[in-house]
Amino acid sequence: MKRVVSIQDISGLGRCSLTVALPVISAMGVECAIVPTAVLSTHTMFQNFTCVDLTDQILPIAAHWKSQQIHFDAIYTGYLASKEQVGDVLTFFDEMRSDDTLLFVDPAMADHGKLYPAFGPDFPGEMAKVVARADVTVPNITEACLLTGSEYREKYDEAYIKELLEKLVALGAKKAILTGVSFDENKLGVMGYDGSRYFSYFNDKAPMSYHGTGDIFSATAVGGLMRGMTMEEALQLAVDYTLQCIRVTRSDPNATWYGVEFEKAIPLLCERLKDR
Ligand code: PXL
Picture (cartoon, protein in one colour):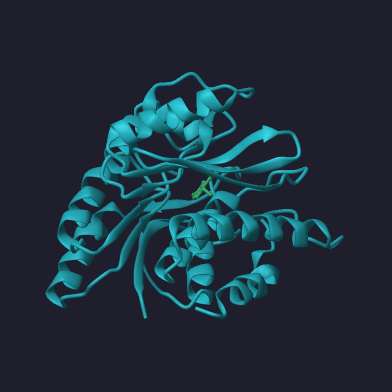
């Protein structure tokens, strides 16, 4: 069985970061080890959330695992608790990465044109150092703009997206995938670039956006890659599963007011992986 380690926060209530990565990656038949970057009561869009930063645990955890000769097939990073943490995450890469370890970086820090509330304006510059090391990075358009110092636009064309992708690859990422891309009001998906070729995949656009769906997308893409899918297959599955999570949530009149009910859509993941 492949083994991933996911480095991101655990928000105790609500479906995001590790409370999504763990169940989704496990359901895909891949082991998911974790390094929690912080423990929060909820994600940071809630008022008065609690937060304990675990920066001081990252390197001791790496040292212990190294002493046990633990091998990871992928290191998947998401929400980091502070800019001070970035240096330790980079050291974690140096310590724990083998030649065959995939570095998957979701620079989760912003959406809809704005940084998340816990971060100051200097955070994107620090996150860019993590992105620079990535084999695969999956920012949304807001994050890509902040990482590359580009102007954020709500309305755009393919040339704008391609330019963002080229700038992300110029930062050092081997493959860049922009999420939440839409060239047609009824379609939403991803566009990627590996330094020589562009690729894209779109499915239906749901009428509402939900918090935490970026984390569902990333966890699914990591799981798919670990199960031997090509990048394009893994991205297709990630787009389709994320959409299905939104659909099952919307179809339930008693849906909770927060997060998507990804649990109900897990059968889709199993179905799409059954012949692998
Ligand atoms: O889903 C991204 C995310 C993860 N973790 C925390 C967050 C957010 C987005 O707001 O606040 C703590």
